[in-house]
Image (cartoon, rainbow, N blue to C red; front, side, top):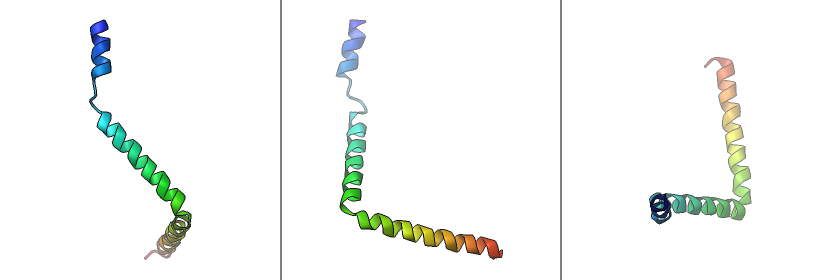
Length: 61
């Protein structure tokens, strides 16, 4: 049992993946904090696309 526990603590597989995921999360948070106007612009663009698609679907074209 102690052999398994020591092997578990020494195992480092998957550590890089977690570090990259954390770094990507921090970058996303920093980008969102530094660019608050961009989020409203993106929201406006998606709203326009949604209304265009809704009107196109409603007319049967």
